[in-house]
Image (cartoon, rainbow, N blue to C red; front, side, top):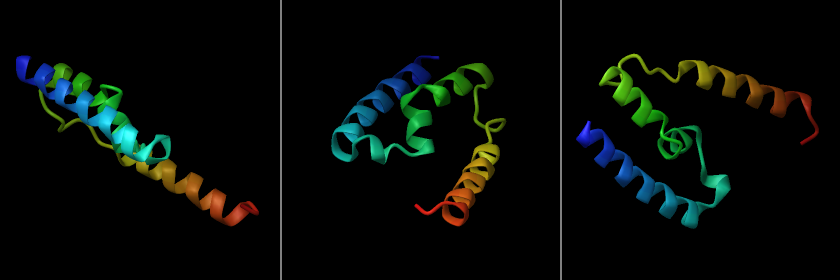
Length: 74
């Protein structure tokens, strides 16, 4: 548990620096999961990330991207 909390402290530092450099446009799905504490939650709940898969979000993102690029005038 202590290592997970230490990891989140480092992640919070990284997230604030990333936000200062890249702004809100630089927040990808993965950066969001780190900064919002989702990774910490899964590590505390299951002690690993084996059950955590991002395939559903990737598929949803691909669907939204396809819609945006093929069905809008941008």
